[in-house]
Image (cartoon, helix red, strand yellow):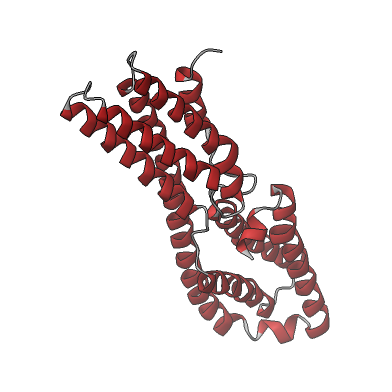
Amino acid sequence: MSYFLSSLPLWLLIAVIVVIPTALAMCAQAMIHNRVGVAGLARNNEIAGFKFATVGVIYAVLLAFTVIVVWEKFSDGQSAVANEAGATAALYRYAQGKEPEAAAMRNALTGYLKAVIEDDWPAMAREAESPATVQALDSLYAAAIALEQTGSRGVAHMEEVFRQLDNVTAARRARIHLATGLVPNVIWIVLFMGALLTVGFTLFFGSENLLAQVSMTGVLSVLVTMGLVVIISIDHPFTGPVYIHPDALALVLSDYQPAK
């Protein structure tokens, strides 16, 4: 469910999560006001006001906590891409040289970056990974091993090469893990039920000024549902209109790939 919502265009997501529920809440407020009457609803104001404050605070804390956690994970995805780009740039520098094995390693790096940008990113948008990128990473490790076996590079040099290769692997695994979504299903249930209860509580209040009451219900609904939009938009960091771009990796590729 969260993946489907995350993949929607932003305007459609806002329409589904914000506009339609808010319109329904405002219409429900007006209908209940006209059917029950101000006098009947006003009797609930004192007790409902106290309970609404409690419900509102609990839900606000949950919503804010979820937004913070999801944003931190989204930032982790950005950091993983930046770390992967930094490691591949370092590997290009460590693979400089005239040996055929060094040239082969640079070509393997170029192949890996192209596979990441052209294959891994579309796959992560589907919550998957690309077999072509796995093969490209295997070829990169094989090229590094072949370079080590020539004996032309020092031990410390090759240790750093393999350390950067491990950094590439770790960064890739991190972004693939994050691509599958960050919020468990049980949290989604609590978030949507909490939104329904929080907005629904406003229907128990009575005010002689119907326009003001309906407007306040609409404002509350917009605030609550916009929080949900933020969570949905960044829950899958590599899916939908709000996603992490491979620009850092593309920049490394443009800087270091062999000129044609």
